[in-house]
Length: 324
Ligand SMILES: NC(=O)c1ccc[n+]([C@@H]2O[C@H](COP(=O)([O-])OP(=O)(O)OC[C@H]3O[C@@H](n4cnc5c(N)ncnc54)[C@H](O)[C@@H]3O)[C@@H](O)[C@H]2O)c1
Ligand SMILES: O=C(O)[C@H](O)CO
Image (tube, rainbow, N blue to C red; front, side):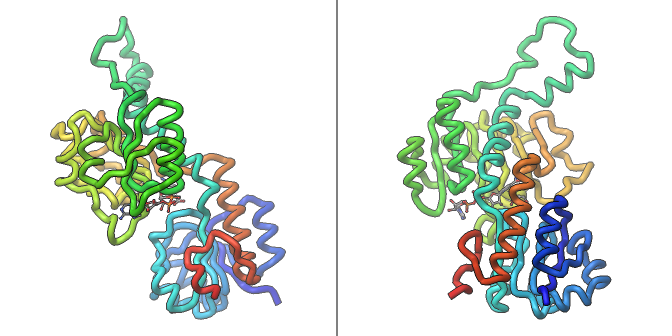
């Protein structure tokens, strides 16, 4: 008999077919409380789950007593209680690597659009405000040759360093839990402590995961250490930055601008003060959102689930110690 799995994100037809070849699939529309109740039987018999978003914690695991594998269509896994999964012996599979270059492209787009005010001035053109030669009120700030600080020099940080250093002649500073040899050798990146990163970066780019240690790592005190001309870019997770403190810093001129792909609450509420600030570029969490990359992530998530439920895991496992 094929193992039962719950699919909580829709897949392209060919990938859905591949999943059906291996498993008996129950497809639901998200891991909501309502769906957990409505599809209690499917969760009670599920050996695997595949999707993205929604909390997977001990309360969830109690409803899925046969679960062996959770496969998320994302690299970030802050919505999973990894300790609870480990206690239950549930493997957690994710999709690093396939999205790295695309997310770095998004971060570079945020750097450029925040500095050159691309969104703001394009809106002004559409509104018919371009009536004569433009003056300084349309100008932005340079990107090339400015110092780019990377907070979280992992896969995405490295791909951003490549773009910024080789493409835009930007000196790279970074802070991470440890030195990154490839970043130092290939892009001359200089390791520094967080305070130095805050004080010296012209663009502070955050590509950190959300953990207990990184929650509100950037708050009022840290923003105050940044240059008034600095731009903050966040494509890691929203809660790494204290959003209220960021709003105040942007309003008060403590920093110059922000380019944000992630927020404390997503979707960002329509009445968020961030949306009325001209010096903010706000994107709807599109870091990896290209057709090619989203397909690649879904494919990897399907392959990961098949590998893990058939005992053939070689990569993409968050808790490989369970395999021993
Ligand atoms: N906006 C998006 O659509 C999008 C897309 C993909 C990933 N992400 C986010 O980006 C994160 C990073 O992805 P990645 O593939 O580069 O991961 P990664 O594991 O390769 O890199 C993370 C880096 O953060 C560093 N780090 C972790 N905790 C730290 C701390 N307390 N202080 C300093 N450095 C710390 C690590 O040392 C590592 O260098 C993901 O976890 C996810 O949250 C967002
Ligand atoms: O972590 C990730 O992969 C992205 O944020 C998409 O959720």
